[in-house]
Image (cartoon, rainbow, N blue to C red; front, side, top):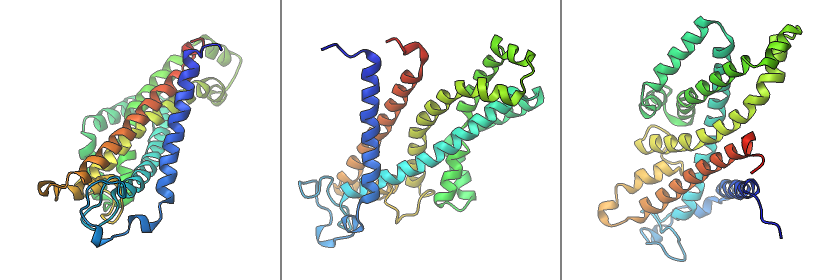
Amino acid sequence: MRRLNRRTRVLALTLVMGLLLAAVYLAGLLVPEEAVASHFLEAKQAPSLTHLFGTDTLGRDLFWRTIKGLSVSLTVGIAASCISAVVAVLVGIAAAVGSKRVDGVINWIIDLVMGVPHTILVLLISFALGRGLTGLLVGIACTHWCSLARLIRGEVMQLRGQQYVAVSRRLGKSSGWILIHHLLPHLVPQFFVGLILLFPHAILHEASISFLGYGLPPEQPAIGIILAESMNYLSAGMWWPAVFPGLTLVAIVLLIDRLGDNLRKILDPYSAQE
């Protein structure tokens, strides 16, 4: 049997990781309310075969709360990353094909946003919009587009100098035709890779802002809220409400980051013969 090449192995691993993330997301959506309901007689139980992650002070199963919380985090991450990626592409193209004044203004805005720590900026935006899901989404979306926008700008400026683009201009092709037929096909891989790589940052910021109390409401089973609740009982010896949800969040973030790296390798034309 012929040995699989590196590209095929990466593709197979990427597919497995994507299916795993999809399974976690769907499992969180399908968790019944009874699985995360309060059972006071089972409160503060350590991890066991009955409750894999143990139970909290209200007797809620932490394993199912964590799965449901991951689904919420993935939903917020998907929405915020998509908005940020679309804004980044539009802003990057505008900076590259616009006038020098437009390019200067956009670069100034990017420098301004990147000069403020993301957590502080998300906190301010979320607080200004009344906290909750809307404020959290707007805050994350408004702070995570800058790096990708700068990358898209550089890519477009490089493509504009290519010979085939100059030939298209001399043949009378419009800027819109050049954008659709020459620029966008090169930007699609950058868009998807950037979208995936924005994903873990969005999830971590959602968890951190919710942990500080400025994100999702307390009744929402989000990872940040679970970790915030666990801080009140660490001194009493209840380590499992903090350890297991925290490790699960880190594992999901690392998995998404690896998925983005593999996707970059797959879409990279230089790796086509590997």
